Image (cartoon, rainbow, N blue to C red):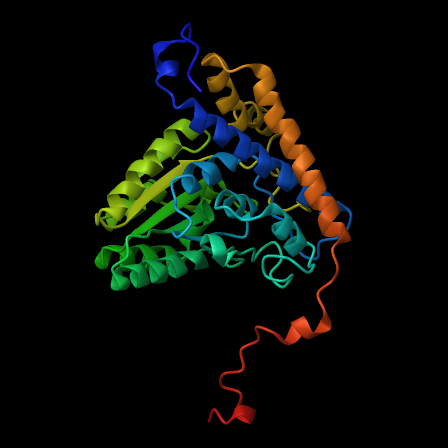
Length: 338
């Protein structure tokens, strides 16, 4: 699609087809999260749901620059990352509900959503643990001489945990093909990160150990897309690890059960007006994209995820025999391991 010739010059330089795809994918992520929250309300999900509503721009801006064979390791807030990496939402929703046909046969659930077929090694309920996993995956890629990239997306709360320094240091010492993205929403669970973090923040810490680092507005998908594209190209060319701090804002509580009483209502209301979907829609409208075309992305996404939810509710439970599959028995003395 080409831009309206009456639009400003800056708008005419945009890749509108790519940005329209970003807008559509962000709506699919939001609709999936809303369906997941509905499943939680309907008591069909056991355990916590950590919605990424308001942070869709980072999932799309990062994963749109990764290939299927690139590696991604995520956080407990990983639905959007997994969907953006290419996972099937029907299998994802079945996984959340513990049903047969889930991405991990119903065994992983929300906080451990994974799909190896698209390079998604999994979400992780342990804050910062995915940073070590990414460093290990990147080291394996380098030892094999491949041109793949390993990417870790983690929250700003992770920068105050040991694996942050350990993982980034390892990646830099061995110049590994790793991209580290801090999904900086300003809160570590219910605590304002700035109140608990000394120094100048995530990017400065990465720079202190030699990683090229930059801070980007994570709600500006155009800017983030460009930053990640350049970073991934440099990594793939052998330039070593890169770090991006993507500023954003979580529009819901930390979990589905969090009433979010620790943030001023005015702040949250203002944040809704600058969410990544709203901002990209305005950019596209300014470039001449029709409003009905943008509205169709929301409508189609909701219809898709409503059908996904209905499918998961009707899906069968895994057979009992599945409980004994995928269980490691190495080291079991009954198998003569000792």
